[in-house]
Length: 101
Image (cartoon, rainbow, N blue to C red; front, side, top):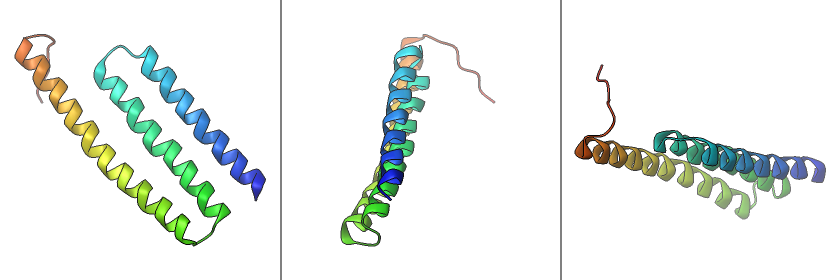
């Protein structure tokens, strides 16, 4: 079980590193938001699963799952609000062209 936990934690670190590299390399703000969302979901899931493997159905595991669910839900709202604010800022400044369906 400790090998599985070590692998999951290494996966979380790899996801965070990949997200940080993507954040540094991508040019637009919207693309960078995708990296932030990826790190929150992927690394958070690996850490939550590692907690469940260490303490199955203990109070700490249930709290970790609740925290992960809240993080994913609030993260999605924050990423959407940030993307909308970036879009409105670009629209107000007259920069960038957006296509409407």
